[in-house]
Image (cartoon, rainbow, N blue to C red; front, side, top):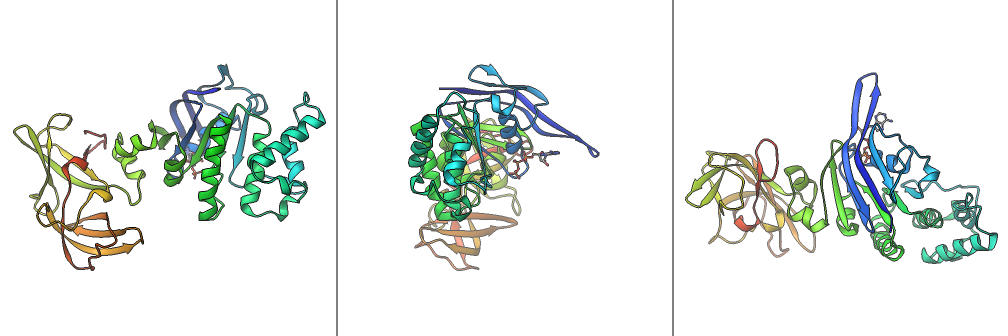
Length: 367
Ligand code: ATP
């Protein structure tokens, strides 16, 4: 198994407006896994992937593949294969020729060996019946399979994918997600996958690396990043609908902290959490985070406050209910049987065990 290591990798672009740091001191090691690089548009994920591929120079830092420093190596001398969103197929060639093109530089293989590799890879991607077809005659999903097959036929050490499913419709995308994941497991290949789609990241990744503003914010298995985000950016970026975030003040009462919203007259106490395990202090202004699926709207006995329903979005399997508390809007994901009307007042329960606390200024997690 080949390890890919990024050691303090930085990319700066100089232009007329000055210097822009697209990737800032990123260190990461990927081995025997599918690592998804996730973040909003412009956060630096494509630049990171392109540096690994050798399509972009590295300003500072070092990239190793399989223990070999490849920082200044040509893309063809890195044992990587890359697949892009727009497939990049050669339209003048058939499917089989496109796939065999990936082996053009493999001079040590005989013609028979090449044909065999192409056939077995085509079988793996379920396109063995398409080998003689023109690529222009294929559907989007078939084209993407050919692009993946062409990349994998070379048996690279590292597989790099940049939003490979972005052009496919939702159903096909979901099917290809599963296929790609199975394939990565079967082939046991170190894979780096770029997307801005958090659902794709959560369902496919062994580990997710969340980036923002060129900086790597958190790396971990999807559940860990979702359940224990290191800061309010990661908390907000993962999850749909996103995590509710309320401004609040910490009020010490013995061995517990009572969190009071800054909404209205700031008197609403809505959660009491143990002091132990919380890095906040009495009087701190914090941001409290609660996932929409943890808010309850139908339990007057335990309610922390009342809120007014603004909009509901019925989803079939569940119901998204948006409520207003003073100037703050909260979203709850509730059972589809809970269907309050806009304008209705509902009791909101915030279970203390589900509460995240972030520093009001830096956004860093305090709990
Ligand atoms: P997207 O999902 O939109 O592709 P991304 O997260 O992949 O976004 P990058 O494409 O890596 O982001 O871009 C990171 C930053 O670097 C952006 O601010 C972008 O404007 C800048 N950038 C990228 N390529 C260049 C370039 N060739 N010259 C100058 N700036 C660049």
